[in-house]
Length: 150
Length: 139
Image 1 (cartoon, helix red, strand yellow):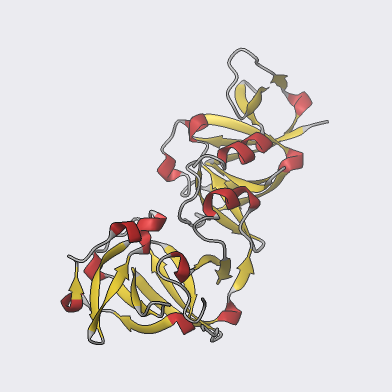
Image 2 (cartoon, one colour):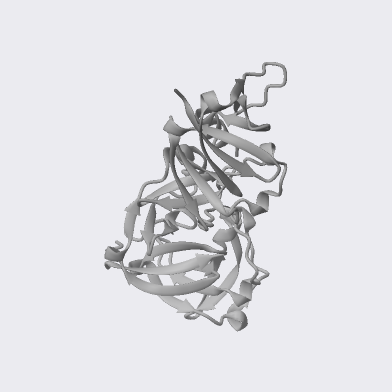
């Protein structure tokens, strides 16, 4: 079961900021090219490769594909966040890790009702950090299930 | 008496009823969020709330990529909530009786309810509720 830690990892995909409770994060890998196998893909499940991590291959997900976010970086120039999942660890590709922030600094902010219909199926939580909107990253939307939840 | 806020975007002038005008912000490019409707260029943060920034490219004929870089953003209240419109120039507030309001039924453009003629210039009077609701529906 994921227990919120009260601290959030702030990262960027393209120019857009996201936040994710640190409880999901196992490790942050900034250089992983040597452990990355781009031949193991399953694009229907948004898997763009496999990462050799702790003696096993884990799936690598690129959320930019799902969110249609343009990135200037090649996959191996990105940062891999190793996340917990119901079926084991998996890796999430992000452009850049910005900081770790107390969740209290994030000010919840409602999505405008005019946008809910179009963006609501992609993300539902937005908070402001230093007056910039940050999207609440929902890992279960991308791969597997929440650990400890059946 | 109706008063209008007058603005320019590229070669096109437009007017919004003053009652719907909330504020004009300067040099605020706003933020890009993923999967926005095609007619929404980004969002502004105004008083802790997100405000969709519309492209209005169908009026100005200008490049859509310059919307966020427009010098001014005009924030207006619609039936569906606040929206922001890009503007290059802010031309002031004018009472309806200082000009002439023409409602053209011949060449109706969606989102425009009439033409306000002021000092020899034509300003498209925007239907804010239509723009807010219809343009944010377009995927």
